[in-house]
Length: 265
Ligand SMILES: N[C@@H](CCC(=O)N[C@@H](CS)C(=O)NCC(=O)O)C(=O)O
Image 1 (tube, protein in one colour):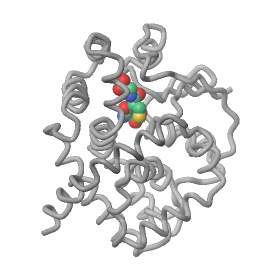
Image 2 (image 1 turned 120 degrees about the vertical axis):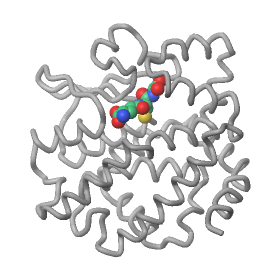
Image 3 (image 1 turned 180 degrees about the horizontal axis):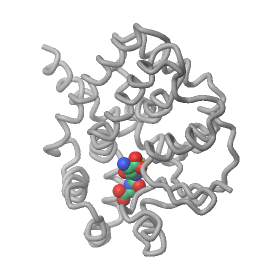
């Protein structure tokens, strides 16, 4: 039996739920409340010492890291195929998924936290915030998280995160001239990987980043037409998070637009 330790709005968990839905695999979920610190509890750390979701347990094997989990699912349950048959397309797929782990995920944490989620954390009080950060195992992530929560869009990480997205979306627009999906002709783990991240930008009112990138708009529409999107993402959208992201995203949108305009000029 497949068990998934996850969270409704976690982009990494959304990615794994999408892969499971595409493969029509049944799974049993353990939902962790990330604001309450369930990921830092000793019993969960035995499964995932990084204190993050997702974690997949399949027939006793514990697999962590969402990119690795998706590859594991593809290796173990190869139908329907989510890695392109063509080796060059497969290489393109991996270049996309690699980038997620090399900065795109971190940039997403910056914008999500600095724009919206900081308000949830600050509402818990400074004592709780300090206790939460003390338990974060990764010192780099700990420092970044503290800065984003306490400084918001004035965080020293914010400008670079926004620039990273503008570059990334430029690359996506170019890549989508080769076919309907990120790796080319075939829908793949690359599209699964990016679906939650583009959705997050949408929720944070950063969809203007693809106003002048019609191929991304088309790709995003195609993704949302798939049954897996409703099953793995929409069904889990947290009714308290969506209005927060929309309201706070709208409040800072002009600042984000200034950063993008400066970068493009
Ligand atoms: N590289 C990891 C990143 C996992 C990660 O950062 N998960 C976030 C949610 S998307 C989390 O659990 N955050 C809770 C925390 O940092 O306390 C993966 O791809 O699985």
